[in-house]
Image (cartoon, rainbow, N blue to C red; front, side, top):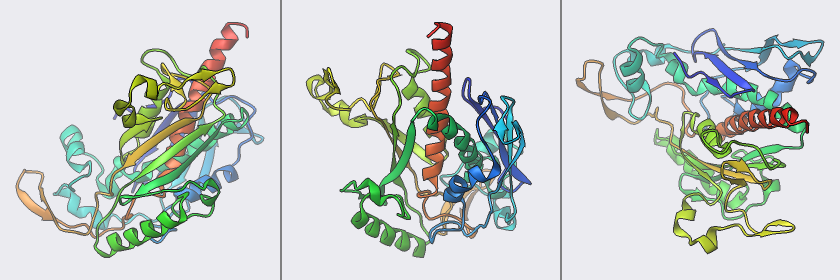
Length: 355
């Protein structure tokens, strides 16, 4: 199974399945001398950990990260860092129905067509559980960025069709949904309750902001920074759309309206979202990700079996009502990994130039 590695210099490979012994990540290209311990992962893993919120899957996992290699005396050595996270609360019985049937909206059908034989328990390799390994890798990427003053934060701007109208960023801290608008969050919570009662699910939009990114990151052709950020964010299973800066709104503007005019003090506006020609311009990088509703729901739906015969399916396992807020830390992690990779590439180029 290919396609499990992301990055050029800072390379992350994830492994494992949802109901296997565990999941993990191998990180190659991390510089030596960075302080790292198992406790460093606790906060971020806690944000993604299942079973904490009222609308999360009730699956209980400690998500403690074990460092298997690449760290000596509390510092990274420059060798590959191997991380392992145990699966302790998997219940495979609820997924036996997937031995015969496909869930609408899920990857069961496409995995069957591609591989034929695969672990379908808990969605196996294509489960949201895999993202725990990404969050762990993002902690290491974040340590690299912290030393450069680069910060990455994500927050909910829409859920169940309810849009945040105010942006009091200090309200995100302590907000169960990571929403900057308390009034909108209250309505979002009611929508989540309703969806849960109906056995349904909802989607939303998450905005990710990168502050402190220097100009010069990214390549001019295929490895554009925005292209790699798009791939990173879109690689998260529930994401179905992405915008950078003005995004689709730019298509409705004139050039005179969309251009970010330049002054000696910087750009007047930021419709480019901090990236021009695939290269960071020093402004804030703004990304928005459209997150689809969780496909595993308790409402009966039409489907087919593995022989193509019509059938019905209704899931009775443990599932989230919405990927938000647990996806917040995942999206932050993927952006951190991408920025860290490009920063190391940029630094390597400057070193070759003797700068």
